[in-house]
Image (tube, rainbow, N blue to C red; front, top):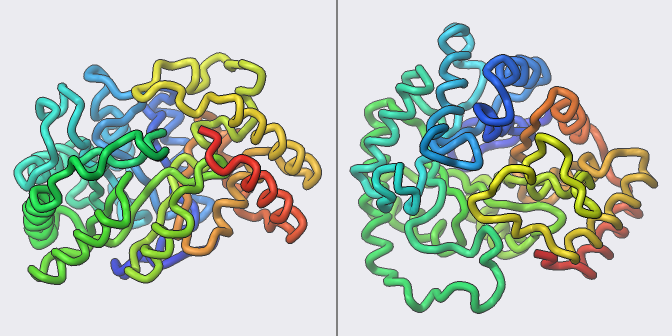
Length: 350
């Protein structure tokens, strides 16, 4: 297993991060336990979760994934230091989570305490903001004209960031969390947090996780370049684009129990004709290399310059083993050229 530096944190994380968002919906406690045990045995030392998991999020299952991880930790109290645990505070818009309110210093404190209780641990290694208070160009909102940046009050947003940082800094001093991370944010968001931490001598953002995959490369090159030079770890989530890069959804197929059979909070925005055309070509490249389409997508993602750790998720042990094995694959120059050709033809298929 290869390990990389997690930004300015001083932590070393495996190039694979075990995602958990299906635990409590598509996966049971026993299945989650098996995934944790197997991942740790393979050298994975990085696990990512969130207070709003499992997905699709709803009031009934809210906090369920953290509870599952907490149950494992309660039964394995001597193993807490074997992995770096990351969780996330939900942003605005979910009425059953703090009445759908913005993230503030006060809600950060509330969320940390609640997550620690569910996780049955004394500290969270990486506490992340799941999405910013302002609307960000994620979840299919990255095309020109979809959102308006000029409608955002930058000073007001910056003041909110300072309030959040002050609360995070206090939690770090109390030993409840160790480091701060962002999610679904932008270069402006990263740089505002970095600037504020320097100006006020507060905790510094150490990572960001955004969607990044063969169908969604908008963070390359500008955000990733920003991460490299700001020493902020870049953590791709959904490297299989919600599973579509596995090829299992081609021609309208919906395998029983798969994610696309469940109602999605943001809809099936990846389900486009261009998506399926691109996936068909990636499947051909994978076949030529005697690997699965999922392994092609993951092997490509991990070799992108600036990627620190790729967040994978699986609903079965077979999928998990397949995905972990992908990180042993080294794509040839010819394969990378073929992939680049598809990327040029389908730069933003959804």
